[in-house]
Image 1 (cartoon, rainbow, N blue to C red):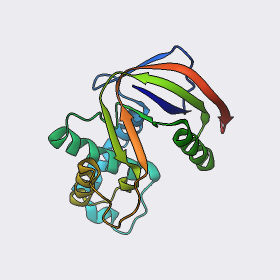
Image 2 (tube, helix red, strand yellow):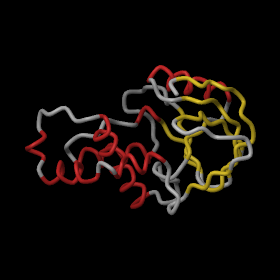
Image 3 (cartoon, one colour):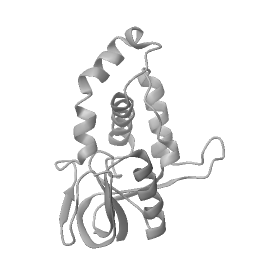
Length: 180
């Protein structure tokens, strides 16, 4: 299948192959697991963290670890968010994601057309959530994400596609080079 990918954080080049699977995780994996001790402490001692503002990195780790636990238990056919590439079906969707990343201040190199031959999950980024000190609540929200039903509040989905396997950069369609 062909998709479009916003190249962020690490530059990519035409012809490059990226292997993503359970043994070959992505950059999110490293960032999430660097917070593992903090997450364990939060779940073991939630009273210490009540009313405390958690760092963005910790929020993300709480969410992603809950998402990964539910995926492994109930939806193993889907690619892991910790070992996949986030892509778009169309160039215009990728362009919107690229503009969003630039606004966030994220290093954004460009948009690439890619070929992916692994698993795919078409989800709703609107269902991504800030992690909380409640593991039960994080797991409940993770189940909603992977079940991929309609949004409870009727909000239109924000399409998010995850792919894994052997991914080839076919063409750099647009150079952005912002926040690098």
